[in-house]
Structures are given as C-alpha cells and as structure tokens.
Length: 86
Image 1: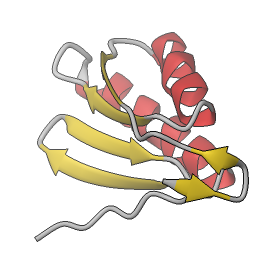
Image 2: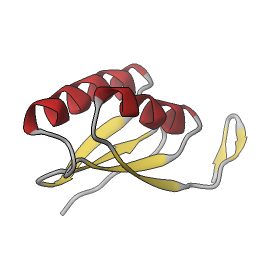
Image 3: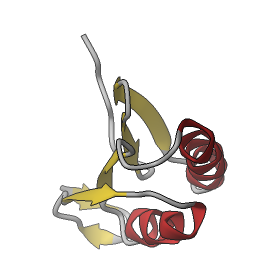
Image 4: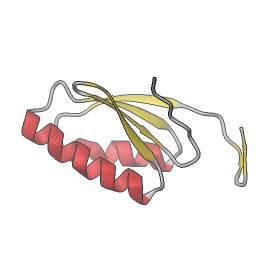
C-alpha cells in the first residue's frame, strides 16, 4: 500500500499479555505500523481491563483504532488501517 511515508506492507503481530508491563510491546508494534491481535486469556480480569484501558489510550493518541474480537481478544490497528466488522 502506498502512503505519504512510502510503501507500507501490512503486518499482523499476535501477542499474549498477562501484565500491564507487557503492554509496552503492543505500543511498540503499533508505532512500527503493525496490526496487533492481543490475547488476554492469561491475565486476571482486573489486569486485562487495565491493559485494554492503557492500550486504548495509547492507540488513540497514535490515531489508531481498537476492535474487540472476542471475550479476551482485541485488535489494535495503526492509523491508516481500516477495520471493518460484520
């Protein structure tokens, strides 16, 4: 895909997160323009909520978007990626 910054080839990174400290890896992947499929099955419900809240703010600041895929699975996409859900 051609962008104002050059050619960009979409990539998807699949990550599992248990703690909020693991979330920085997701932010770095988004900054590198990867789509991230995040699985939170291993996190406690409270920690999962903290992770999603943190990442939603970070992705929003980077003009990206968040889509809930399943009970414990989220898709984080960088700016310029269109996520459609049917």
